[in-house]
Image (cartoon, rainbow, N blue to C red; front, side, top):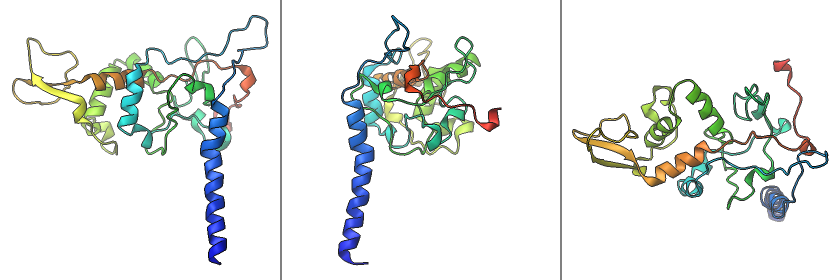
Length: 233
């Protein structure tokens, strides 16, 4: 292979990747037009929101490089099996809405400064983390306290010993215990008379994580709801 052929091949590979990862998503998202939920007269507009999202939380998420290991994309069936992983693409049996699983669409990121779709999926996808935390809460676990402990040191949880997520102790403050202490203090030994409590950045980040619920109904015109696979029939 000549040097010229090699350079052309590299340039072509880069060009295709650049088009697919940067140009096409930009063209799709730069001017999103309103979409009706259905063709029925008086139908509502599709306007997704992340309930209770703290704006600063998204910045904390970005500053700490969470997007390097976590995606926020429920892939279409032809590109993966996300819809059929427990709770990743929504819930298959929501008590009030039935099957809420669906793929990600550009409108899911409307209003956000950055669409943090992620770089790698070393850790689980977070598109519907808030919905999974709802399930955790129903089982009697406080989602906020669980996430605080997870951020401080993932290996504190015996079920997460194999986690590759780095600890984030700088998001917490060691301080003297006053009175009965903080209800948000971590269940770790901080030293006699001391406790570890979440800093504002940790609270914002956890609020952002809990707001991740992208299984709200989407317009039928998107036409990306797949039929159940053979394993579910």
